[in-house]
Figure: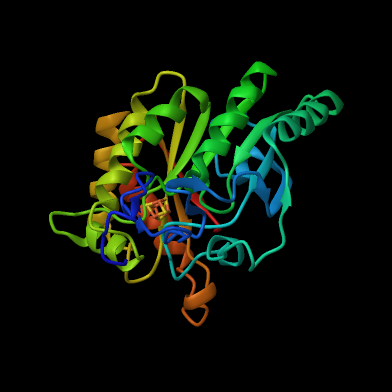
Length: 294
Ligand code: SF4
């Protein structure tokens, strides 16, 4: 980041706290200093739109059998080398095609789909990192609730507390990534550092999960990708599951099998038996543990 001067503005959306000169974009490529104010430049710029089963988000215990209009833009505040959506997550405005869909239009599309098929329950904010453009989520979610639709958030959870507190009452179900966890050491924090996150991002994710778990109107599920050599340790999953159970023993915890992707395209996929084993470890503390991609 450039040296801070009075011409710079600090973005307070996530724990990176990018200091942006006039016209400069943040690390996420989504936010920019325009006329002395940090704005979500990709507001309403949609790169991906699809009707997905809610189980694909993944949400295992929220309106099973329903469908959600899933929407994504570009940009992310992490740089996970195994990202499955790097084409849009690690992209900026000039790197990917997008079309503008304002909140009114998105909600109208979801509402029409719901009228055609009552299994369409609402909108999912997903694919890239939705919280780097949280104002779009807020504006769409408010309109969706007015239309009787539900809102689903799929996020890495790296956002400042004010963002989570603003969105929590509008979100009916969330799946938050927990990419690592300290098991009597600093391995969890180290993973977030290795993913290009700032020193406070690990705490930010934990705080986001705590706030959503405490929100009476939000159904929360959590996902950890089991990456060989990173998160495939009994101690890591045991500690994470114990922490989640202390927040809410009803939380559903997804352990997802890693497949070679992007900068880890030459690595081996996680052995299925290892994912099953770690799920048994998590079940020491949680009743609802699911294996993904197995
Ligand atoms: S959302 Fe995070 S990464 Fe993006 S500009 Fe703001 S502080 Fe930087």
